[in-house]
Length: 186
Image (cartoon, rainbow, N blue to C red; front, side, top):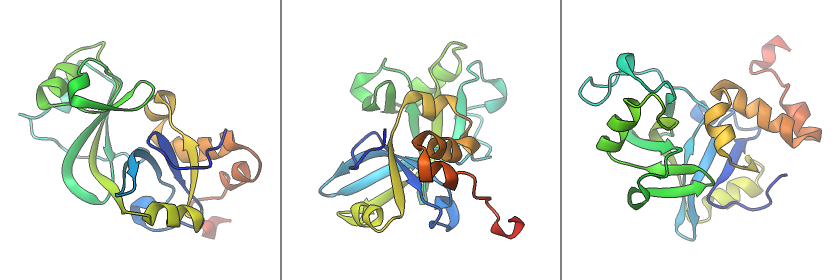
């Protein structure tokens, strides 16, 4: 199933034509899309960084379902929580079934210390578009779109998401999934 329009809960899959920086082979979860513009989180780019101990000690996590991602090039020092917990509806926005955005430091600290806690992607930064910009990029062939799911966001290895989604889309998309990252090895 391939979407024909962009809505909250849509995945943007960078086409092979997009070859710049963070957006090269990026998959972005659209978290908000309206007449004023759009924002989303890159979900397939792992980020290696040390967080302040008082915020979160990654070495002493009880919950092994925590991952750090580069959410996008805007405000990279801002952390957003993308997770599977429906326990704090007053603090979260449901993006698609079983996937929520939001939460405070207390929620995060409780979630990481719970061995059976929710899946959480700590996303640093976000991706944003002015009114009409994302539609133009889509119509110009910069993005394919696909419905998001908790399965894709939290259970698929980040480095495999781009190729796996193209394979699931089938046909010409599946063929694109086999293009090597470095064309000089072709």
